[in-house]
Length: 211
Image 1 (cartoon, rainbow, N blue to C red):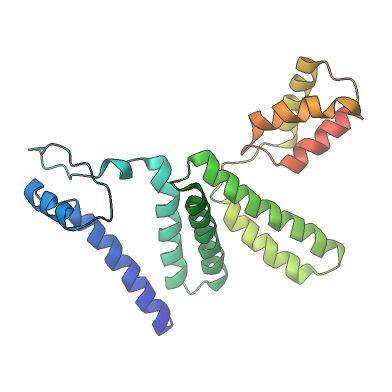
Image 2 (cartoon, one colour):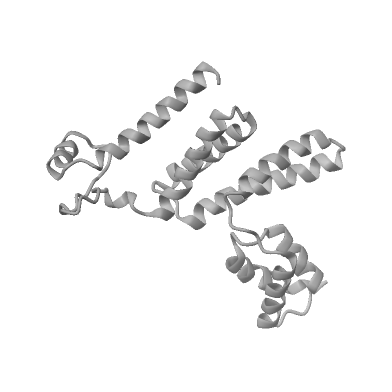
C-alpha cells in the first residue's frame, strides 16, 4: 500500500478508536470532556451501574449512522486491498452524501440517502446505455463495475413483474384508459415506489400498459 494511503488509513482508524474511547469514560470524566469541547451538542444520560457505555443521544440512530459506518469500513477495506476502483467509487458516494447533508443542514434519513444513491445509479445506467450504443464496451464495463458497487448499498429493486402488478393496480385505481392519463398514474405510483423501483422501468411499463 502506498505510504500516503497507509497514513490515511491509520488516521481513520485512530479517529474511530478515539471516538469510541470517549464514550466509555466514567460520567464525571465525560462531563468534564463535554465542558471543554463544542464539537457535539451532547446530552449525558444518568450513569448506569451495569457499565453500559454512555452515548450521545443524537448518535444512537442506526438509520442515520449505518450507511456512513458501512461506507467508511468499505473504504478502509478497499485501501488495504489496493482496489482503486472500489476505493474511488466509495469515496465519491461518501462525498455525495456529505454534500447532501450540508445542503440539508442535518443528517439524511434512510429514504433521502437512498435517493442520493439512486441518482448515482441512474447516472451509471445512462452512461452504460450511451457507451454501449457507441460501441465503447471498455467504458461501459467501467460504469457497470461502479453501478454494482452502488447497488450493493441499496435495497433490492423490484422486478418488472412486481412493477407491472403495481402499475395495473394504480391504473385500475384511477380508471386510466390511455396515454393521456399517464400523469394520473405516474405521480402517485412513483410516490409509492420511490427507492424500490427504477423510475425508467416504471415509466416504460406504464406506457406499455396505456399505449
